[in-house]
Image 1 (cartoon, rainbow, N blue to C red):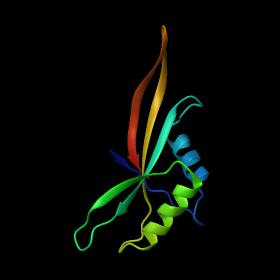
Image 2 (cartoon, one colour):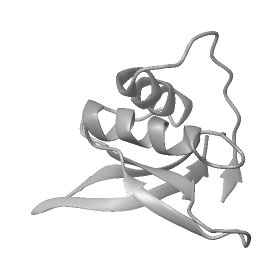
Image 3 (spheres, rainbow, N blue to C red):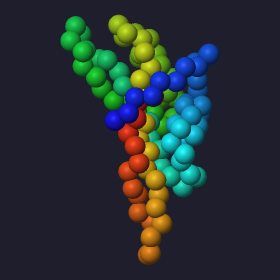
Image 4 (cartoon, rainbow, N blue to C red):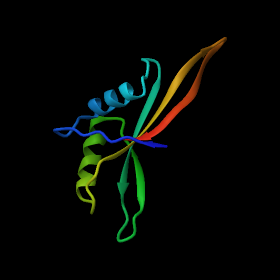
Length: 100
């Protein structure tokens, strides 16, 4: 897994995060991309949970959750899959798993 850090002047919307990830990984229009937010949900001991980030509502809830943690840092796990054409159908090939 590769770590990538992106800085924004103002809090980005979900669409901006998706476009940033698509650009970084050179994703095509048919390629799949999924985002999960990483939240520290431990009390004293660090314990992380991943939450889906598919909608603007989920993104807003994730940001509110992170604001309440001891280290308010937005950590998003991006999974992208290149769609490769092949005879008789299409095959999904894993490309990268990255933290941004």
